[in-house]
Image (cartoon, rainbow, N blue to C red; front, top):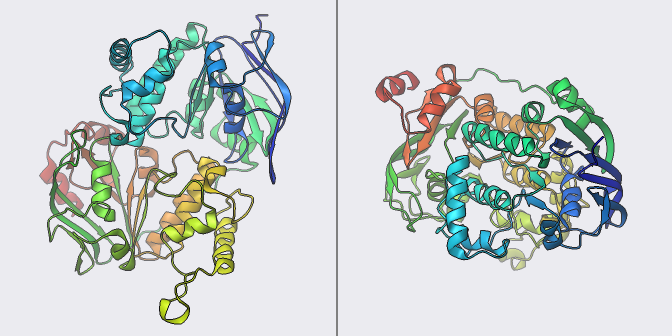
Length: 511
């Protein structure tokens, strides 16, 4: 028997009001791809941060290659051959890709790091420009940077926290080839994902966490999606029920939208035509960085440069209208960036409601526009309960929640407003199977209530599950819509490269 690459014994970590890890033990062998599975808030990310030195445990010990080690910080972790790709990225927005990668490396010049990034990106099919500032990247592109940075350290233990959450199926296949190659070379991999089919395909061992405790160890290749779900959440996720429904009047009408990029690294939008009717879900697929950010900024009102007459909400031209004005007309929006745009990290959940909801603010003519704090907290507590958000309460700060639980709160905040038009980007990014089913169910309930829903996602399975018809966005151009009865993974995958062939015929079929 070889010596384990990693052993955790009795790891415990508590925060005020919650025990994140309780006497967790885990063993990873050399060359093993080991999954850590659990629902949102089960303690997975905390455990990985302990291994990487970002969090100090209250009790327990970490052993590497048979030796007890004290990992005081990420620098210690890297010195011990450990690299980690975080779900929420550790990148400096104002620095370039190359400069961010350079920070974590020693004995290299910036020119050498730039060349190494280009080489790794080419080798693994993770296209990225080393000269681009991070603030110009999409979430998917930021994830590529994190993966490349981790691979450049040539780790003995690689920790991946939701690495494929915003990658296309083609990119996921390429990443799996890379991970299997690393495994064959002796690198051990700790793999966190809520995509059960990925775990079953890639991993040969799995430790299951529930409520911060280990509740099972298994070989996922000998399990089914249903059995893994039962291990993780104690039940199988509910099946979505779709009802046939004729859509109503057009709610969102985008005609001939062309918009020049705001920076040299952006994407020009070219002649976008898009309609979403009440009572239907329209999806937009595509590889990250093909104009999704620019289109969503234009639709939400964060970019008000659209030519007049290009974007209409109901009977109102909103092309130059700011987000608050569009919200008053019934448009509610969930961005892909949870922390920073969807929520203020340092504010409580209750106060984050004020970003888009004003029910707890008194009207100025009656009480001077004061915030009714008790009403605000009650509102937040109701959303926490309704959407099963794991948090210590309405005054918990946003950054204290796991990514999936924060996503549930943000989505719930916007759905609770009963929008006429609901636009959501990456609705279930990093969300466990049970919560993903809940969010998708809420999207379909909105549709059935007559709301117009636009979903932008890189999860093809998600789009196929909730959409009535869909488009593909490639290089700033939007494909014709295709009804789901005619959509296939092969067709959509080809369209992601901008190849939509007999477009006119498809458009006629979708009309």
